[in-house]
Amino acid sequence: MTWWCTGIRWKHSAPAIGWYGKERGERASALVYGQRLAFVARGERCCLGVRRAGKRTPCPASATVPGRGGSAQCPECARLDRSFSVAADTNAADPRTYRVYLAWFGDGMVKVGITAEERGSARLLEQGAMSWTWLGRGPLMAARRTEELLRAALGVPDRIGYARKRAVRAHLPGAPERAREVTELHGRAAALAGWPESLERLGCEVTDHAAVFGTDGWEGLPDPDRVIAEMVADGAVVGRLVGAAGPDLHFADGLVVDTRLLAGWELAVPGEGAVTSVPVARIPAAAAPRAGQDGLF
Image: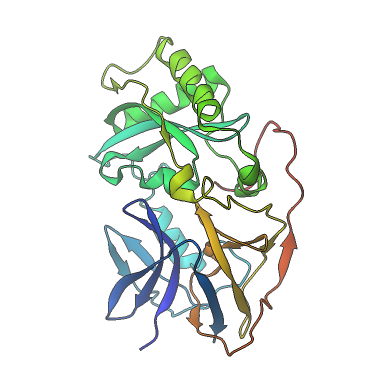
């Protein structure tokens, strides 16, 4: 029975690689910083279907998907997925309680967003937020209106591209400085008029993810200088894991593995002496923060 990779999973504030097998469900393999990782892609990259409420519906067409895409879904499954998506504003009737948050990714890179309360901090880990705090909690539409209010009033985006996040991750200031910008913006947000009455405001309690991501370890993160551009059949990835943030795995040699590109592949153990042989792209040196964003968060 084949197990297909589903990318990174943040379980109990720790990274793991997820797997899916038809009629066998899902499982995860815990990742440990310092361990050697080695895997090779087999066969073709397959659509992973649609996952909702912890259950996955297989792709009815058993479609294949391109190796460079960030999503392991065919167009049909992607459309179905978005038809129930809060992020795409196609599920306004969601009855769950939502939370509004501020997340910090680097100097000048702060965003506002919402997440279902039942998910806890999982969304912040998935995005690679280094420091963050809650702002409020309430019904979905009240949380969405608050997000839009704060985005406009504070001049912060609701999305920041992964490329920008990974470029600065190895050169972040200390925890007090990371928390300061979040605390200041929380204070400015709390002083604004126009919050929906149905949204309960929450005090500022900054959480820092440096220890979780491995950026404050004895090694720290090396300068990321290249990232895998795609997985290809019989292409291998080999290296020592030193950190992880969002969908990214950081290797000791400066390679970054975007695990979204692993999703949909059957991964096997390569032969002895294997080295990284998949296409990679160079990562430019960290630059000063700039306005706007590129790509999906």
